[in-house]
Image 1 (cartoon, one colour):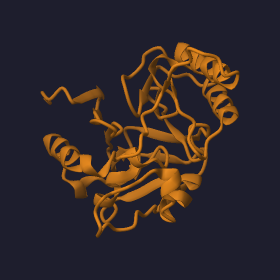
Image 2 (cartoon, helix red, strand yellow; image 1 turned 90 degrees about the vertical axis):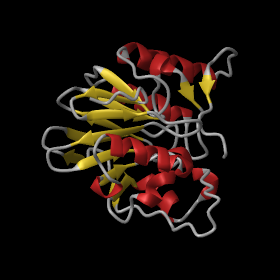
Image 3 (tube, one colour; image 1 turned 180 degrees about the vertical axis):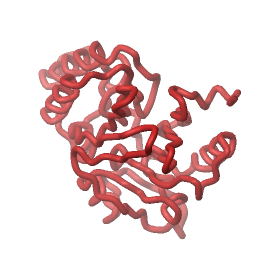
Length: 240
C-alpha cells in the first residue's frame, strides 16, 4: 500500500502522481500488457517523478508508453528521460510543435545546454485506442486550450483524463497561442455526449461532477468571449 499522499490510487492500477509548482500531474496506468504514463510534467520535476515510480515498484525503463495531453512545457518536459525506453505519443498537431522545437507555442525551456531533442514516436488521431488489457483508452481530440489538446477516455470505468481541457468546477485554463475559444466550446460540447463518471485533470483536484463541470466550462468560455468580468481563468502555464 502506498502511504505517500502525493500518490493516490484512483482505481485499481491507476495512480495520480501530483505535480509540483508549475508541473502537471502525471497518471500511471499499470496495464496487463504495458505500463502507460499520461503526461511527464516539467523536466525539473523528473527526480521527484522517478522517486514516486520507484515507490510503485517501477523504474523509468518500465514505462512503455507516455501520452502527452498537449504540447505545453509543463506536460512534456520530462519526456526526454523516457524517450529512449518508451513510445512517446501525442496528437499530430501537438507532435509537429514538439518535434520542430516550437518553443513559442510549447513555452518549453530546459536550461540544460546539452538537452536532447524531444521525440514523438506515435502521432495520434481522434479515436486512436490503446488496449492495455485491463483498461482500454480512447483518444478524443479536444482542441481549444491548444490545437493539439486531447482527452483520454477509459471505457470500463468511464473516466476521462482531461489534461488542461477541463478542470474541476469548470474553471478555464487560458487559451494558448494555438488555441481557440470557439474550438474549446465545441470540444466540451462533444464531451458532453459521453457518459463520464469522473474527471482526472492535469492540474488541481479530480472531479466526480463532470456534467456540472462541463456546463460551467461552456458558460465560462461564452462569458470570456463576451469579455465579462468575474470569469475565473487559471493560468497554469506560466513561462519557467
